[in-house]
Image (cartoon, rainbow, N blue to C red):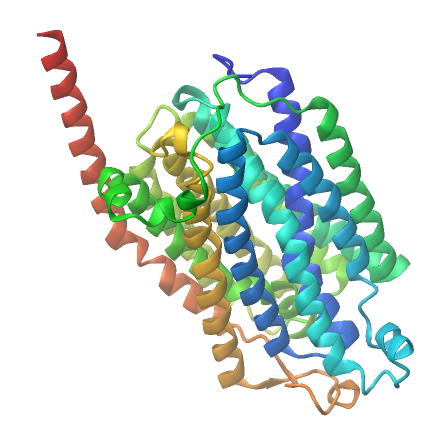
Length: 453
């Protein structure tokens, strides 16, 4: 399947597997953290370690699975069976509670807390292994295989909106469902859905006609070879921009719902509405903008996107007036601005990376994409964010309910301010990418002219 346009079957696969994968990632990024904080121990240090090790697992897995999918010339099997096992891992995660572990080991729940904290970190890494194999390595390579520059911006615009739709579903609906059915039932239901997608993928996914067996295990480090970097400078600069933006996001994102529930005092319904309105408006704007970006210079549009993102984060930092209603409104407006910039940068960086990725090496280069898009942001960002939280040392609202063994502090508003500062570093990198693209275009024109002569 290598169509001159992105056909109906391709859109169906993109939307189904893209959305299911993003919902699973959103649950991991948002509700696994909240699950640990609320049901095991209010320990932001454990949350931070879980995010960091998950980033390591995702990157190593994508390096291996991306290379293997190139070596075998098969994306379909990795996507389908990966989703099947991914769903099973998600379904089992909710059973990793101190009570369940205590019953298995014959100890009381309080003594099982440290073991439970270790178990959720390991469980998250196992889930990430299957998710990264299916989504980060195989599905992303499949998208690159089946898109062309002429419509890639539109496809990337939709792909960039899917995480926001997933976030809307997870932050809103899942919050209410947690109160109704609990974490175990919720994770079990989600796992079944993800696994069903994998079974469906066995039937409906077809690989690109141009996909062939390519490379071997030596290509695990292909994307880090000096020769490859020299041959694709625009690709690596686009990846660096993606990495800086990712660090800015990870400074605040792992703690966002916890911040809204603890520091701002939002109820489940309130943060669901705030999140929902911001995401819907931001997504609608970016669906339209995805098509427009194909007719404009994507690198130059990053200036606008970065400014919007930083402005939204600064607004979230200052949205702390005395009135609860005013806080809801101001935080919602700032959240809309932030999310608009968030999707814009994601879509533009994604399109730029795909534009500069050699199609023949798409699988081998998914690993290096993960280094910049996941590993570095998830190692550095939460480390910065939690250092800020530790320094602020804001106490839990209900200290009597806190376990004396935990850190007993909540996210601080300064994480948004630091995220805005880091995002402004993009303004030092974007001019380099613009100049690099201009030189590349000039070389292309010169080579075309020489060939004609």
